[in-house]
Amino acid sequence: MIKFKDGFFWGSSTSAEQSEGRLENDGKMLTVWDKFFSDSPYKFHDNIGPETTSTIYKHFKEDIKLLKQTGHTAYRTSISWARLIDDKGNINQKAVTFYNSYFSLLKENGIKVFVNLYHFDTPLYIQEKYNGFVQKETVKLYAKYAKTCFELFGDLVDSWFTFNEPIVSVECGYLLQYHYPLEVDSKKAVQVAYNIALASALAVKEFKKLNLKSKIGIILNITPSYPRSNNEFDVKAAHIADLFATNSFLDPCVKGEYSKDLVEILKKHDLLPSYTEEELKIIKENTVSFLGINYYQPLRVCAKANLPNDNAPFMPTYYYDSYVMPGRRINKYRGWEIYPHALYDIAKNIQNNYGNIEWFVAENGMGVEDESRFKKDGIIQDDYRIDFIKQHLVELHKAIEEGSNCKGYMHWTFIDCWSWLNAYKNRYGFIELDYNTQKRYIKKSGYWFKELSDNNGF
Ligand code: BG6
Image (cartoon, rainbow, N blue to C red; front, side):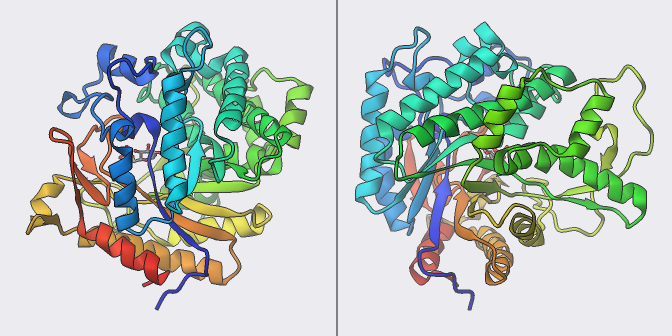
């Protein structure tokens, strides 16, 4: 039997934009996702935009009952900046009432409340006025917003997080054209990455001033890079891939400084951001005390076959190619490689190279297309999801036995949610959502999760 330590928490994660919904007169301002959906050439799956969610804004009372029914002892969501603060800087009292009631009810039900401040959802008024995190003005506004959240909800939240997967905002928004503003500009990408690390440190600084009982961290997606062979070129390629995918945020947020190798590469391409010594000091002095790690899939890397031509914009992939490793298990419903052992490697990396800082799995899960085809007797029989979670837990457990400071596991996600580019194509939840009727149905994995949590293992 795989048994976790007492106090190990079992939860699910979601985000404001993907779960809250927008109701008439709720005071929520537009976000970059509304703009992306209405104006961009990108075609969302089934043309479903960010307004179609499980509408937790309205349903949180019944949803908290479902959290209990499925054994959750912790729950992570985010606050919507665009809901809380309007374009004139005023606080939306309806948002305050909503978050107060939502977080209080979680607490009353004995569920740990984990709150993230930013999950890809820049208010549109900030994106348009300051080009989002390209400008330092947004950093200042973010720090102010963070302070407001700590002051308003500080007593209700157990753990705070400054950002979710900041490298995704950088890559998708400024290199790969998957997120608004759909730009390809390496200089801006590096500036946004630096400004987000600075904003995170400023939020930590504000947090420390308030002496709250809770902790503060950041949520990073880690995609460990594995070289195709032991030859020096492949190994170097994997190291460079890690510098961008992992070290870019892990180092400044946990160690308070950037990796020298990363700085060297950026210098070589004339891509150092605009920074001041005073800002670097803020980053140095305001590291996080807790980490959330999202893990879905690894990166398989080999040395670049051909270097890009001189005019191509700089991308991390300038130095490496990624490839699909033959014979590897793939989530055939989503196309991502399934490699649970990477979770062990992540745990060891944190233990050995990042001071064994306290952390938890903040997202891990399996997206499945057309999931209703697995429905029997009114319940989705998602044994594939149960297997997926078990295999990851085995690796995690092994690392914890060897001293990793991991405190809990959160699944992505609780109720099937709207997703940035795929809308409802890939379902991840423990709970099936019919978004037309807003009805919820617990899947087999939801019932299993209750047993897992009750037994603290399987
Ligand atoms: C994570 C994000 O990257 O992956 C979530 O934090 C996201 O917001 C999840 O929904 C799953 O990815 P996708 O693209 O299948 O929704």
